[in-house]
Image (cartoon, rainbow, N blue to C red):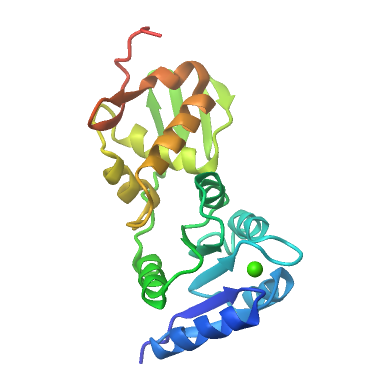
Length: 233
Ligand code: CA
């Protein structure tokens, strides 16, 4: 018999945690509750969950800090994290995704919505990863060491921007729509708004500096990485 997916709920409000737990249990999932980061870490050390529902506002370490910590640890970096946030504004959502959350859900949410997100995260495909170095013009990316260089000099690129750049460099000269990029780079993230892509493309260009012109906006269509970029700065 297939084991029930284990869902670690990191939530400091017992009433919310209890409500979520009951609903998950009724839907064939195995909830485990942790009231703060310390308790959550204890659970994770004991056994890796299949999904983490991570509240943003927690006593002690914030959900954001926990997401970052787990993403930085080889043992926990692949655990899907679904961020629970009471804040609805874009910068926070982007910060959550940057910290390594796979998706977010804004409180108050319905049980159906939560279950849909959990299922999506559970079946999500791992984002495409390259095992080798890709070079386009003077821009190089090493997927194994997570390094990006321009004319041999290292560039500092954030984790989401790195994944985005990796995908674009592996599929150059082609136009990718925002929804295609969400699908290929973020995985099965049907709930993320398309303008999130624009936010990360903007950041990617900022990180690339002089190489930013390789990332072209194709009006009305999406984005393309091209070696044919002319010096039309
Ligand atoms: Ca809270």
